Image 1 (tube, helix red, strand yellow):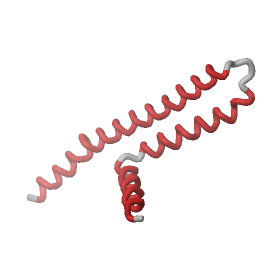
Image 2 (cartoon, one colour; image 1 turned 120 degrees about the vertical axis):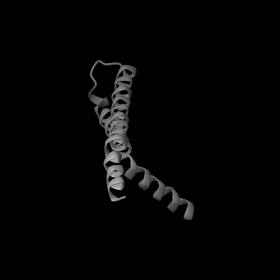
Image 3 (tube, rainbow, N blue to C red; image 1 turned 90 degrees about the vertical axis):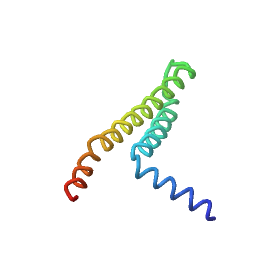
Image 4 (cartoon, helix red, strand yellow; image 1 turned 30 degrees about the horizontal axis):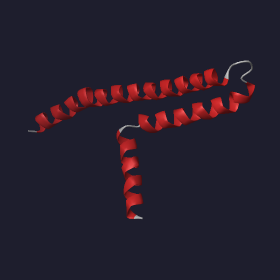
Length: 92
């Protein structure tokens, strides 16, 4: 049971460090679920084309979330820390 608790706390810790990971996962599952429900009403579209469109949309959302996560972490690293370092220098 302790291994389960460690994994859960690790996921929560990682989600707090980079909040775009759970967003990307949720978007991926939402797009896949929506496209699977729409499969019945795909019309004359072939199954393979429908599945390729679903995969591209889901991957696009995940890549977009990853890109936002990288931009967010770069912002925190380069613009957030200099102000903290300046405060540390001023206190000395």
